[in-house]
Length: 439
Ligand SMILES: [Zn+2]
Image (cartoon, rainbow, N blue to C red; front, side, top):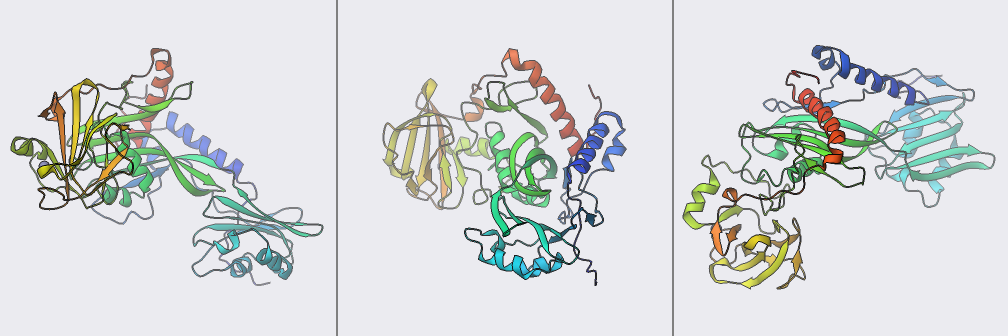
C-alpha cells in the first residue's frame, strides 16, 4: 500500500496529552526562572511586520505529532483541508476507500458541513485496514461538528455543536500607525481589539490619544473545539501604555454573576462618561498624525472637539441621559443634545442622520448609537463636532472630574486580589518585562 505522507495522524484521545502540557505550563509559571518560560513561548506565525514587535503566547502547547494510532478496530488519521478540496478528495487523503460512505455523506439531509470545507481546518477519520470508514469528524466554521459513524444499517450522520474548550491567549504589540495595524501584526482578532478599546473607553480616546510607540498587552479567551480555534471570547486582562502612562484592566466576575473591568487596585474602569463619542471600529480608526495635543489646542479655538471620520461612522452617547434636542440648528447642522445627571449635557453636530426612532425626551444609555457622522451645517468635510457642557457652558471634559462606578465590593476584594495578581503576572510575561516579585 502506498503510504501518502500528507495526513497528520493523531491520537484518538488528545485530552491527556493536553492536560500534561497544561500542567507543565502551570509548573513553569510557579517555579522555573524566566528564561525557561520564554523557551516555551510560540511566536505568532504571521508576525511578518518587522518594525512592530508582536508576539502571541498561547498557554497550552500544541499537541506533538503522533504516529498512526491503532485501535482494536482500525486507525485514526488526520488531514488538513487544502484549497480546492472537496469531501471526496479529503477522504482520499484520509485513506478512506469506501464509496458507500461517500454516497451517504453527499446525500445526507440537513447536513451542510461537507460543503463547508475551509482550508486549514482538520478532519479525522477512523478506518479499517482496508479503508472502510468507521468514524469521521470535521469541525465546520460554524462551530458545529460533523460526525459520521458506521452502524448496523449503514451510517449515522449528524451535525452537532462541538464540545468547546477555553484556552487563554496572551498577545502584545506596539502601535506604529494604528491600533488595528498593530493588532493585525500580533494576530489579535478584531473582536478582541475592539473589546480592548471598550475596556479603556473611559480612560483613553482611541481616536485621538493613541501615538506611535504606545504598547499594549491583552489576555483573552479563545474557544477551541478538537484543538482548533473556533472563536475568540472575553478579554480577561489588558494593559495599554499610552504616551508613557500605563492603564491596566482586569476582568472580575463577582459570585453574584456580575462582571466588569477594574484597575488592579479594584477601582471600577467604567465611568459616567466615555472619552470618545465615536464608536471604535476599522472604519473610524484613522490615526491622527498631529503632534500637538489636539484637544487643548482646538479647545481654545472653538470650544468643542472635532473628530474627522468618514460619513456614516457611528456616533454613540458618551453617558446615560435623555435627548434634549434633535434637529437642525444653524452651523451645527443636524444636531443632537443629550442631558445627563449633574447638569451636564453633550452635543453632537454635523450629523448625516440620526438613529432610528430617536426623539426629544428619548432615554439613551452610555454607548448607544444615536447618529452618524456627516458634514451638515458649517463643515468643510465629514466630521463630528462634540461638546461637553456644564450648566450650559462648554467645558473641556478632560478637566472635569468624572465619577466612576462602584469599585470591587469589600467582601469580594480578597477574591479579586487573587485574580488581579495572576493577571499581573500574565501581563508581565506577555509583554516581556521582568517579573520582579512573584508574590
Ligand atoms: Zn467643531
